[in-house]
Amino acid sequence: MKAYRFGSCELRPQSRELLVDGQPRPVEPQVFDLLCLLAREAGRVISHDELIAEIWGGRIVSDAAISARISAARTAIGDNGASQRYIRTVPRRGFRFVCAVDEIGAERNSGSAVTATVEQQVRFTRSADGTRIAYAETGSGYPLVRAGHWLTHLEYDWHSPIWRPLLDQLSRDFHVVRYDQRGNGLSDWDPPEYSLECFVDDLAAVVDAAALKRFALYGTSQGAAVAIAYACRFPERVSHLILQGGYQAGRLVRSSASERSEGEALVTLVRYGWGKPESAFLKMFSAMFIPDGTKEEIDALAELQRMTTTAENALRIREAVDRFDVRHLLANVAVPTLVLHARNDSVHPLDQGRKLAAGIRGARFVMLESANHVTLPREPAWDVMLPAVRDFVRASHPAAPA
Image (tube, rainbow, N blue to C red; front, top):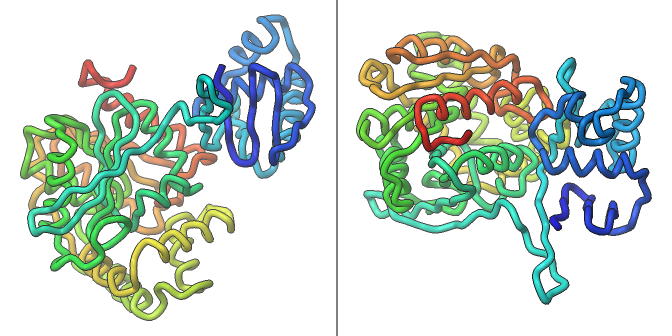
């Protein structure tokens, strides 16, 4: 029987043990069953009716009894109703476990534990100009490729509280392929050039190395421009185009003088503030991406960016992506397209998302009620974003996740 590991906790259904920091913690039977249900279905909203059916066998139970068991479950794993670090209340719908969960199984003839669910396989390929590109594959099902974006590291992202929840959810529904764009992460840090064309070449190299004939393409932030350019270059390979928090024109080429000035200011700040431990700039920069993030989440994103590339590369990448311009390509996109954008996106304004959707024939637009450029698991937008992506792909492809 599988066990479930999350944070500093481990649930062992077979022996009915809850371990916290390696030490047994006693809990009532119904609380233990409740924790197992939530961990097993991590990321999915569990309704009150489902809770009653699973935990109480369908008997009539008051809301107060449910609340008491949820409260006890939170206390047992070091959570509470204010922080909702593990168990989130979804108003009028139910409860959702928002922490990444690893399913653990005992090896036969061995006392060691092995991860029984999502594992990533990291490999390398070379782009058209010889730049070495690292890519990873996880999950199974219909293939979904995430275009490279600012800034990633395949290994650090896999353990990041910012990115791991999303990677886990996508990998449960799809065969996910993602990569570190040139100049950061596990890819080469000294490429000869940074340009939209080169970033598209990197994506093309990864798709070929992964032997994908046809796939859904998911571009976020500047990855949206890369995805659009790739879909126009290889329309026969892309079955679905998903664009989130993207833009048609980078800050340095937009018509708005204020946005151009903002882009120039960010480039200057990157030039002088990147890579320094405890950098106030990096924390401010990270707070732009997740203004509703906790201090721990903002600090984690700042540290991730610092470790992902050098100050010189960060500057070159920032200057390149702020000059991306795909306005002339939008009318040429010939694949089903979904555009998602946060209403109060602090990195790229909502107007950019609207222009993408308006410029691509037949594109569907979904508003996310958020100020975060990176959607976080505990916010309502999370419960809109993931079903929208899954349903969009499933609706038009029989092999997509059910």
